[in-house]
Image (cartoon, rainbow, N blue to C red; front, side, top):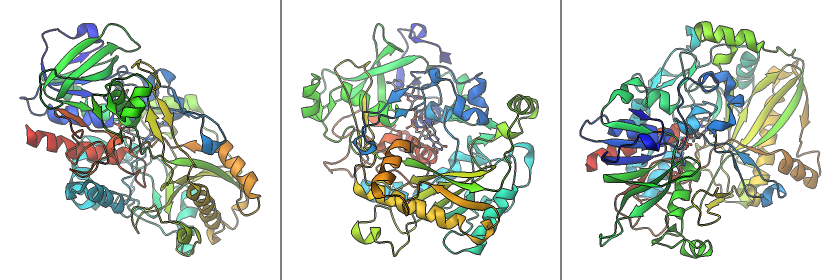
Length: 557
Ligand SMILES: Cc1cc2nc3c(=O)[nH]c(=O)nc-3n(C[C@H](O)[C@H](O)[C@H](O)COP(=O)(O)OP(=O)(O)OC[C@H]3O[C@@H](n4cnc5c(N)ncnc54)[C@H](O)[C@@H]3O)c2cc1C
């Protein structure tokens, strides 16, 4: 059942598992655990219901989702961005960020996951062993409207029965899409890759999105739909913030299975204990914030904000890695084709097709820094392996312009999440750490050069007329860096703030069972445990992590 606030939670209610946060990690774990009728599960979400919100359901409204469904964070002033603070969207609604993300479905490189296996000292987290969980999670469905997308993906790498619906775009291939395919044939640097989700993601590919029947398929749609809601052993508590996790008084070792809950925004606290475990799934900013507010984190920093340390765990909130994006543009011979939004909405409402049944462009490029680049001689390559691309380049035709982002997938810079005071309702201090490592600025320049070479390819000869920049090869370094600082944005892929590490290692926050180190009864299942940001948009990685985690937890109980 779904409770709309704390007043509806019965004082007598008792739960085996309490899952904090109803985003990607939390929706999967709560749903999978409650498949077993013996497990009584409480899922606590700070935000409201996702159902019945048109702007969330319509993929094309991705950029216009109302701020009430977001935490509305702002980063600290960024040294690497010339002191600029960056607004930072994170979902605060059932489904979490999957209820307002760009819906791109990209798993990344097999090397990314093999690195998880390595740093966790546990091969369960390697690509090969996680692959069946991608299939379990996913259901590849036809594009909205049912067009034939044969040749634009490879069915061998996709799930058929999973709760998460994934599809290719409604329209296409457009002339612009076909030009790109032709260009991939005509030059050698970036080739056409029929299946970007095979573990080898480099190349030009068609976009796959978490869209089913033309509607956004969030974690809440896939995992907390009517069937899950009918389970008597699953309670979803909305509009309720978890402020702290609390230790039990009489345990000899630190034992934490209790949460402190308040109505969103503040009010009287309610304490609820789990019989088996508490699972934090509050996301890469939310989960470290809850730990720090609870006195679990670096003792020195906690002292400064007058929070009593119950467990000195230095890496909580450290190691934040994220994807910075840099807009670039070309002049082109195309003619703009504006969308009539009212007509498009009517089409979507009538049969779930049309331009609003798509979110982002049709194609993406994943590319590496060329082997011979000086950069790779001067710095240790931060890529997870030889398969892993350093950049994503988005392709968008806007009539007289071709636009795109160069996205740095393999940053060396790291940020952090800290708390600003001992008031758990205060916003965390989010330092994205962008461009604090010199490699990252140089790598962005290389990425722009890759993009420039792409549009110089033979297929674009009559279409792309010039590079509008910013151009690292004509601008003075200072000017280029200033433009980068002023215009860089985020792809909202934070990870690493509660990193996984091997059992016995003093580094990291959770072990390879995702248990908080040195604590009993408390696990973390969300993007915060991913050690390095994958060479992909991060939802697929979070889904597979949560699917695997659910089985690990089930095996324990
Ligand atoms: C604008 C945007 C666009 C994105 N685009 C893409 C994309 O196109 N493709 C892709 O793969 N990924 C994308 N992502 C990233 C992807 O959505 C995330 O990687 C993924 O959702 C992470 O899952 P999570 O479970 O860690 O956190 P989330 O999904 O964010 O879930 C965390 C949940 O915990 C809740 N919560 C937090 N604190 C508390 C608390 N104290 N008490 C109770 N509840 C709490 C939040 O309200 C939220 O519902 C995007 C993200 C954003 C924000």
